[in-house]
Length: 483
Image (cartoon, rainbow, N blue to C red; front, top):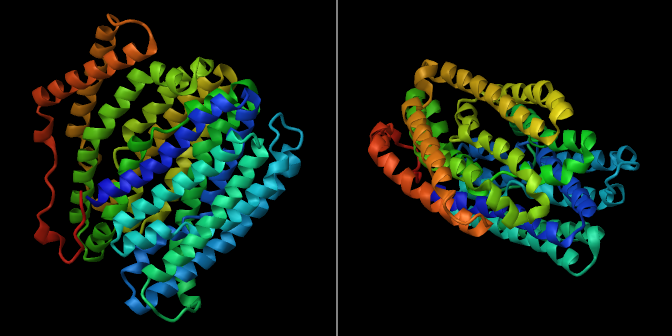
């Protein structure tokens, strides 16, 4: 149940971004949409870099501290985030001379964006505090509420005709309200206790968080580096690629939600020297997530031509092929690989994995972008993710002392993938009998795919290959977690 709630909250956040894009491409001209898309790209990276993953350490430290020390940890984490957020805001201001002569008129909006980051970054630990306090439903509500507020802050000013500056001012208002709400939440959720900054505790927190922060930094650059390549090398294609490189909300977030909910159990297993127990939980979660993520990914690729046109109009139909290629990345995101590495204390591997991904993007995607435009960028992103996947699995294999053929639920995963691809291909052929308009084609493809998929999963005996969950008695004294 915890996973469902958290995934719903995070999916609402991603769906909100998709909703904003779908509406704004209709309200704004193509140049204005491209400018706002670049501004939002800078914003999302700055928020992530500003946090430097410091708030993720709350999972690791919160349960280890006595109740009287937990408020101190939360306030201390917020203070560290305020410092890193201020640095991120200064970096945004430093971009002004670099973007002053670009075709995207974002330079005049950068001070407002910097203020937004300065106000928002200290609040990033809110979901982690609530999850650590075993209030997963509240964490989901906070994520959803913040997303809706951000949507309103962008859409209302643009809808009123206040343009891009109005949208930037709306973000500032959103960040201010979020900060006020976070201060109230912090006071009410954390147990009473003295508030002080402990030097030894800060050093320990920084040592734990620094590799996570470096991993996040490279990960965020990886997420948007393709957009920046297209923006710099193929400016006319940037607006379309900003749509093509959008991750599908539910599919992308289910693994991270499972990882967050399992975090305390994985940490507990490693602390008790039971690496095999931690691996068993992680393996079972990955196999069960595959049942949702792999078919959903193939289904999205199958229906992409109709979805892109219906959501973003025929003007952005050129985004279909790169979107389909980019969506292939989701096929390996059936689990949160970082969750088991963090729980084992191997945060260095997270950073190295992100470096592999970044290096792969630069080596593969950059030349392909030069040669094939945004289609090449998407192909390069897929290739780089395959390299990073292989590296992450090798590091997990070393931690749990299992060979690569057993570190991942290969039998289940490959069977699901084969059934999904076969169902997708057959659905594509059958849907050709339906009218060619987007709505009937979408309905035909989706209906055929679901029916063929359910039948294929039953015939292939997929559920019989699922790894068993460890017996509950082995998990004690970890807190119960919903899978």
